[in-house]
Amino acid sequence: MVKKLFTYYLLMVGVFFLGRVALFSIYFDRFSDSGVNYWLSFVYGLKMDTMVASMLLVIPLIVLSFSPMGLAKISNFFLRLYFVVVLSMLIYIENATFPFFVQYDVRPNFKFVEYLEYPVEVFNMIIADYKLALTMTFIMIGLFAWIFLRKTKESFLTVLQTPLWKRALWFLPLALLLFIGIRSSFGHRAANISDAMYSTNRIVNEVTKNSLYSIGYAMYTNKMYATKAIKQYGQMSTEEALQRMQNTLGIEGNDFSAASVFSRMEKTHFPSTKKKNLVIFLQESLGYQFVTPEITPELLKLKKEAIWFSETYSNGTRSVRGIAGVTSGFLAVPGKGVVKRSKSQSDFFTFSSLLKPLGYHTMFLYGGEARFDNMRSWFLGNGFDEIIEEKDYLNPKAVSTWGVSDEDLAIKSNERFSALYKEGKPFAALMFSSSNHSPFDIPEGRVEPVKKGVQCVENAIQYADYAIGEFFKEAKKLPYYKDTVFVVISDHNIRVYGDDAVPINMFRIPALIIGEGIAPKIYDELISQPDVLATALDLMGKDFEYPILGKSIFSDAKKDVNLMQFNENYALRVGDKVAIIRPMRPAETFLYVDTHLVPTEHDVELEKDALAFVIGLNHLYDKRLFR
Image (cartoon, rainbow, N blue to C red):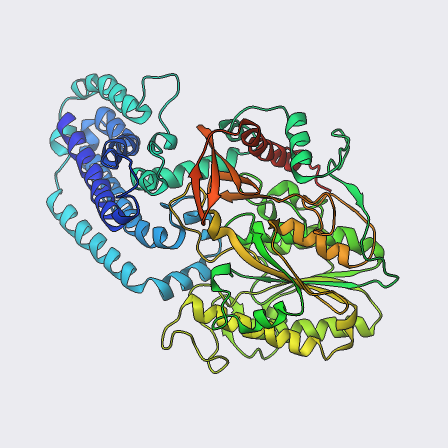
């Protein structure tokens, strides 16, 4: 029995080892000059692999130890089936690690399974983007399963036909051995994913991890973030956390026992008797690196007429983070974004809850299915009057995997806004683009592709930019334009990658505010998505009371600060100094120099401020205090 279990331990560890060797080789140039001992990746990696293999051997140990001799054939069949499924799964995950790493610059984590509740969209995207990888993977799995089942017909019978009492005697020592393997530590705490993060180079740490463990750990911590997982970042009282957040953001003190902790009155700098409309055109995955004359000529035309924010940084790397940032002014809460979490499905602040009581009609316009990412539930639950989605477009010009085109969204939006304006009804709307999304299948004949003959992000952004241009060309002809404040901003970058613990430069996104009477300018100070929302509300010309975690650029209290979430890591940037906190790891301080983080001496107060945001944001969500 010992030999049999050890054989399968070696098989599983062998699959992990081959995957790690391949990942190590592919990304070697990203850490070869890092100054870290990258060979230790295989030592610490073996610990991670042993933890996973030991977990997967628990069921076989129980079956081998206690299965009656009379059920030997049935147990043999079960164990063969168990291992062919387990090993096939490991082969699949190790193969899937490579395209996932290309896309997200990390091993598979919660994102790997998060969207399985949307099988049609995900399946179509995978088939479109990864045909060759999927084909090779399933060929490998098929060959393995065929060989395995042929060679192991009576694999476990010899052990299972041994007297039960003899097998049962082996259970305790082998169970203890597996327990040690699972725990992989004789210290007070069991080993976990933080043991893989032994170096200062993020890519080395990712190579060291185990993909299956990374997925399982992310799923586990995502469910427990509201309680235990937050403590992994550090300890701080909620009162201190909220006070530090206020000081860092430049928000005047509030009653921490109040129903809305951050709510305060913000006086407009542009008083107006009109009820101006608000339109936010949220762009899917438009990173600042794509803002060039070749790819985004329409956006750059608008730049000349707008307030252009040249140093805007997203809250996170997912659409739900961007949606929360630009519609509610909330920052990236640990775990799932608030758009998808239960306690924020009602009575959570949005610009709808602010403007609807003033007679505004509020709406969300999208080209795809609004159920995706729980958007329909979140918008309707938090006061939006109207949802326009794929089913509401008659005879669209183009339909792709993710719904109707951005061009259709622009046409529908202008039609709806004009109709409301004719009715004399002020409105506030979020338009959310979708064409710039893998597999990047965009309509032909609209633009001269940057890269001809291929489906790629550059061409998709070029088309998204074309749709922005078409939207504004038509809007400027319509009466509603003169009474509307427009925002164009991205939700996040298409792919956030880099060797730094948090690749700050890849969080940079374009943003502008445009409208009749808004003086063009370039604002080159640090700004967040909530800051952009606060600025747009300021330009509407009314005094508003709200809890937005940002300030208008016209406020004297505006601070050069932003909080960025990258997987489980958080970076608090104040000016060019950055504090990074990670679960179960010491906080670190860096200087942001030439798009990279340079280690510097600890700024203890800044590191405490970063911790304060993690604890404070979770508290605001958990106690329903953001309203």
